[in-house]
Amino acid sequence: MSPEIVSQIDGINVSLNAGGMNTINIVLAFVMYGVALGIKPRMFAAIFKSPKSVITGMACQLILLPLLTFLLALAFGKWISWTMAIGMILVASCPGGNISNFISSISKGNIELSVSLTAISTALAIFMTPFNFWLYGNLYIKAAGLSAEVPQLVIPLWDVFKTIFILLGIPLSLGILTSHFLPKLAEKLKKPMQWFSIIFFLAMVVLSFVGNINAFLQCIKFIFLVVLLHNLLALGIGFGTGTVMHLPRKDRRTITIETGIQNSGLGLVLLLGTSLFANFPAHGGTLVITAWWGIWHIISGLTVAAIFNRSRKNG
Image (cartoon, rainbow, N blue to C red):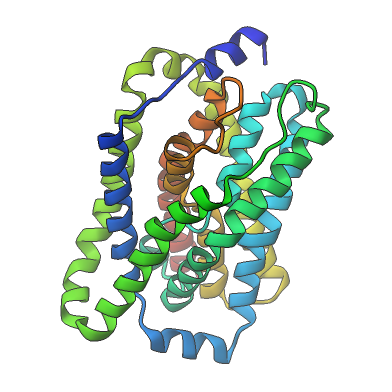
């Protein structure tokens, strides 16, 4: 990738005032509340009687995806900028995406497993997202020989912890309580909330980049290929690991989707609403990778669902 293209991508800047950031935070929390409406405590009891699939799914999301993303970023070498590599690592460090349960359901996957994996990865994100991002972000900076031009990645722990807890932890708890004590209300809200989450993220990305639309369109072909390959890696990790572990077909489908759909909305909030990159040089590549992931994984998720359904019909 030429220095001109890198400069153009990193020059993309998104700035939101306090009101805009608060709106995004509230809506994202509302979306996570909607995800939690499908979670019933009894699901965990059933899933953990046979924990092999849960452990496999967690290993894919929390261990294999961040590790192999780091290696993929190194394999790209000079073809991508360091900011794009950091964006890949940030996305891989986020928990499962908020539409994964919806995609799992239309893929005829294991819905209970999908909801359980989303709930567990979301709860663990309070600790695992900052840890994985710090670990592999700094490893990349060191391995790529960037220490002289890029500062060490220091996670503002309280800032990040508070953001993740408020946006994920509290809505998740409230959603589970609603599902338990007000099951009829939870059932009515579930479907509309799934579609709302898709519309919200698309609107969030469009509004964020409306002031940089020309630069975004000029660099999209580079971003598209990087995210495509990264997403194929994530989907491949889920499907390949599930196959190696001899999991049932429904569980393999679910783990493929859960690993291939990441909560990049959380990644955008961490980039725009915390001091994560306060001392870093221009890093538009990180922002664009994270934002485009959120759009692309909707497309790829629906495509994978169609492939799974076709293979089911063909025997």
